[in-house]
Amino acid sequence: MKPLMTRRSVIKGLSLGAGASLLGPVLAQLTAQAAGAPTRQRFVFVVQSNGIDPNHIIPTGFAVRKDKELPGNDAAIEAALAGRELPAAIADLAPFSDRLTLLRGLSGRSSEGGTGGHSTNHGALGCFPGSQGPMAQTIDCALGEALPSIVQNVGLGILSKPDQTLNYQISASGAGKAMPIQCDPEQAFRGLFGSVVGGQNRAAFDRRTNLLDFMRDDVKRARTSLAGEERAKLDDYLGSFESLYLRQGKIDAIKAAMIGALPRLDAQFAQPTEVNRLQAQFELGAAALIAGLTNVLTLTSGGGGQQYIAWPDLGIPIDGHEIGHGKGVNGLTSADCFVKVRQYHCKLIAALAARLQSIPEGDSTMLDNTLIVYLSDSGEAHHPSLREWPVVLLGGLRGKLKPGGRFVQLPSYGQKKHRTLSNLYLTLLQAVGKPRDKFGVADTGLRDIDQGGIVSELLA
Image (tube, rainbow, N blue to C red; front, top):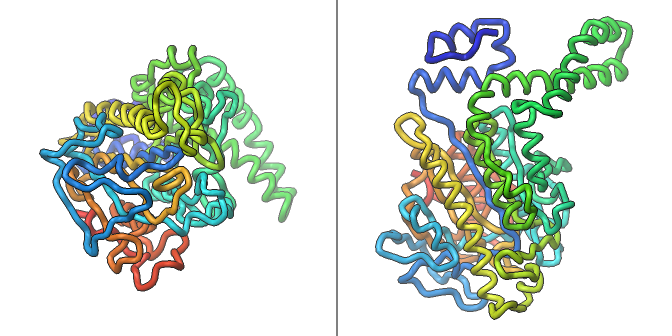
């Protein structure tokens, strides 16, 4: 196969060759960019355990929330962030104030359902009862399906211990199909980038693909003597090798971009503390976006069940469950601990945003075409009511959303114009051209409220 060189003539020539079938998504993307077409839309979901206190996203000039108090407005309130200070918990996002939308007032009562109040599990991204397992597709997987890429969804995160390597309680590709969040940065690195940087992963891949070439004719001859279920099983077996081969062909086509985007993770790997592991996952996620491996990234910090993390590097050696029940440590109150942990997450989000902002993409930047969605898997508190679910939006979607720099307070739970987390996710799907009539399970406690509509305050 000829090397990918520059501009439309070479890309067009490749698209006519026999190898083009291996590189369809990549060639389509490169051809569109060479022709000056709009760049891709991307999403990053940052899901932090233990709730997000609404006070942590309320800028100066608005009354802070008292315990269990809901917004009392009958209509949405919108205010510019210009001239206002962000609360200390999210102050690290201040450099991106003009790109921020602080969204208060959404609810997510349909996501609870007997989880003990510590997490809604898949319900946070799926809007269905978390105790029921993966009942349907979660929003990250829905958007990954809507925005095809080499790797449909990349899920990275951390759990409370370094030897806990997978989290199956946040994302789902469909009913009964939980998607893993990789919680070991070193394994995530090998899985995403190992085959282009050499070493054992590349050698292992070469062995598998050589086997495919060796056995292809034999398998095709063998299947002629089989019928029905046996032939289907053999086809599935061959299909697994074919998928591996096709995926690696696409990866090889962007090998240079992938190598250029590789993060420097030596320190994070050498010291597997909670702080380093989460930073490593943010770095890996950024590299996957920049290299073009994926359009949808999910980054989790704990989450699912009672996965609470202690942060000794931040001076908080007790886990989030103790903090959630009012315990402080090292001169910090429980509230201080919540703020300090949130500050660290916002620092990582700001670093990710800055990196995307620095990369030109046509007449814009990667951040202009990427929306970062920051929320918790347990709504507004350690033991949430889910009548409010604070969300922070940072970035853009090629102008599909209204400009940032806004604080939006939606009408409270039960008000006629109240909106739910389902409405937010329907808004995102409409923004990428894949509208739906509903998402998740309706909240039976809300009457005469359009749970199948969008959040009009967000769409351009």
